[in-house]
Image (cartoon, rainbow, N blue to C red; front, side):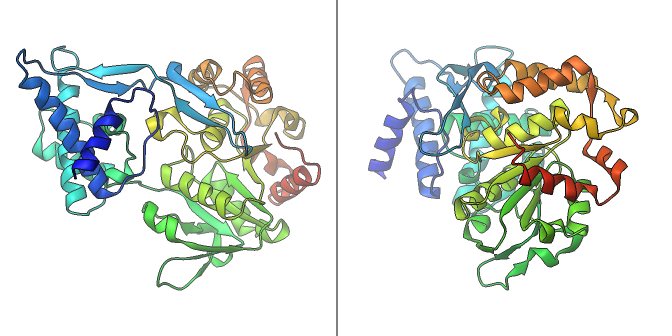
Length: 384
């Protein structure tokens, strides 16, 4: 235990660390204990004070992109600048207390060897500490504060991901001591991705696919699965039904490690939100804090792109929404697009045209056209 504490104390003093580790339960306990000891040490010093909590700044201005040296994978990470939570500032006092409240619950969860979702944790905190927690957003942000303070992943803290993701197509998935599931026989509903990352890590996977196709929308996923596009194009279909949750990203990353020869291509709407979803899979998301980089994959953008607008009737195009403009502004200011000319050019085209195009607009050529569209893109290697 002493060795663990010594290593943790050294860890807490290292201002260069910017990633969240995946830790064993006893290691998490040690880091929490070190955080408490550091706080008490300052509080009981000859000149006592209440120490601030040093956290890594999670704003986009603190993000950088790391280029892979031995792989094609690039990822987003948080740089060195720090921010603090202070009990002595009126506007930060409650946030300071919330960190300790969440850390206390995480210690209980780890000791009991339990797993809880962020939603379950919110209701527990709402009942136990209603003066400090009134919304799910407060809990979500505080969890990221604890991750930043302890430098360990949410899953290490016993917080389980809620997953919306689905898989279909030419892959067999077998959980420990269970029968293998043939995802090509799951119909248009697909195989539901578990939020248990340990379970996803232990899956036995077999495939004869040649591609992994990431789909932004549930409805498009259902259409491709119903049409058995994965037999026409030997492939695995995966969707997060919008912005990807950590469990869906984890499974895609797991597939990319298990089948490194399979190209990963993505189908998203031609709008800033679609590009944002693609970038979350490809680079990670700053919203995930110190875990932003961990499950980045080399995803290629197959469509929709500006060149595809010639396939779409003018009547099917729609004006950009205010939310699109907000997302575009965020993307333009991010480190992700600074050195990625192709993606930046596509975003500039969207803004110049003032229009957006949904994948469903391709149905103007028939309900089975989407499969032909993907096949043609693959044959021409038309993806970026």
